[in-house]
Image 1 (spheres, rainbow, N blue to C red):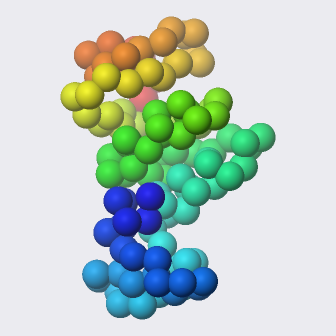
Image 2: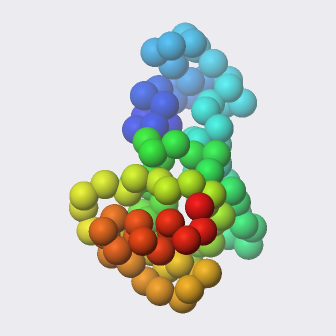
Length: 109
């Protein structure tokens, strides 16, 4: 996640090399990466995925394939052209593409 979203490399315990900021501590990772890590690790909590930009979008269905996760999303995130599976708790519907997601999300965001 750190490499993909922040384009940064974990050097070791407590050191990350950012192309923008140089060597940083994990606390200086983007809010999106920190939110994704929390979604992955804290299974009993609900997180606001609106802290994540579209560069985090591919990780949400990926995390959901490995373990059931619930997130709050207050904007229409672009999940791209590849198929995915998301359940919209507001309606109980399951969507598999942006084509299916947009009309439903438009009612809520």
